[in-house]
Image 1 (cartoon, rainbow, N blue to C red):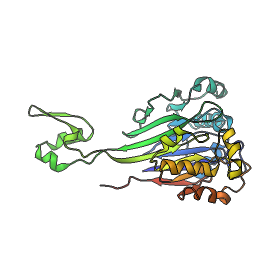
Image 2 (cartoon, rainbow, N blue to C red):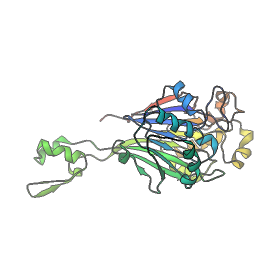
Image 3 (cartoon, helix red, strand yellow):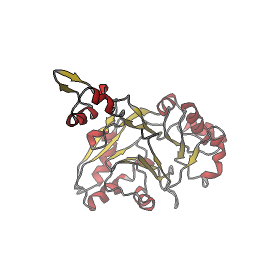
Image 4 (cartoon, rainbow, N blue to C red):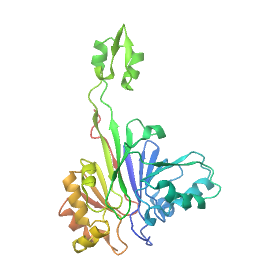
Length: 308
């Protein structure tokens, strides 16, 4: 299963009851923090999220409302004794944009490892995540270099005991086949596919970052189990303004969700002028019924579709 918590849901400036955008994803004790706006630390405490063990911070772009929570967070992690490396990934320009932030963080006891997101994404198992956990990025349409993220958790096929029995495979070798290794038995090679069913449906989570409508967002969101999309402007009359500034309205986000055939849409990144985000939910539901207005502290859990 995958747990998602919205630490902050705001844009531009924090409000007394709304921190700036930050979303926490956790799977089997490993975690990714998407963006780190001002107020992330205090909002995380309110949401019951412990950031001390966060493994990877994935930044969508380098506007202040998405990164200015980093200096305080890094200092706090060190203060409370973190020694494990922390990975930070982001679009082109990561090193130059984070250099001033890291310069503010004196006497950090752990290593901060910066990785501009590779074109083919990150195999998160290299960072200690479960096999099949993968993070890829895609370009979005904002005012500066920006990207969204796709977190996928693949699911192996089912081990077919009857096929293993028919091939007379000893019990002590079956684990290797399940882990994807071929084995040699009585002068023949047995492949994992000989005893495994096809890969089963995994879980897909998409995080838009800041963007207006664009083909890359729709394409990468296709079939997502959970689509987290920015919705800076609530009202339809602000559609032109939203597009001009590289943002979306509720309806624009919902139309993207519908076109991408996602299962569930969560809206976040609300303008401080949107004082009651829930009041405008009809603008989204008219386009895509399965829409949720996220609040600071909102959480949800995703499961594999079946256990067979």
